[in-house]
Length: 203
Figure 1 (cartoon, rainbow, N blue to C red):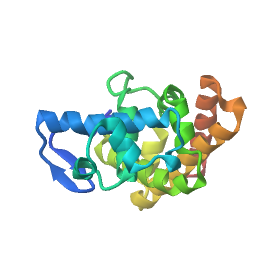
Figure 2: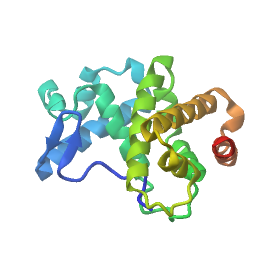
Figure 3: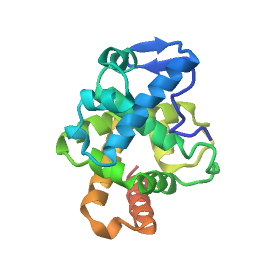
């Protein structure tokens, strides 16, 4: 199964700005900017991070930042894709969606807590995750039996379905940050699994 979180770091690079054919140096610069946001999110809520801070941390000029990203939200989309891509090739095709999501979240707990620290971020997160889900559904073989992907592929309106499920996943993240009882990996996995099974039964 093609990983729903396949990295967007290969040349050419597809961004909100358009298609960028990058040199090795440009690839490194782009990764430095992404890494800068990652470092800042380990200590600071996303809402409080400025483009100036990102540029200072990445040691790049403002004009360099905007050569790769339209704004800090575009950068956040790239970072989330990179975080999720850590597990690309490390999990088998049979790995359930609930386990994949819980592993990604648990491995980046502080970062996700700082991303979801503000309610204003919910819409942006839904947009980002919805895009990842749509791409995964488009690139995943029909034989795949993952509940979430199957629901999207079988929907007469996959774009709306992706958006709806993205909202559900953001809700899971919010619940996880607010409720300490979901902190254990097994509890988080079970929580996501239950939600997906409920959706499947409603379909």
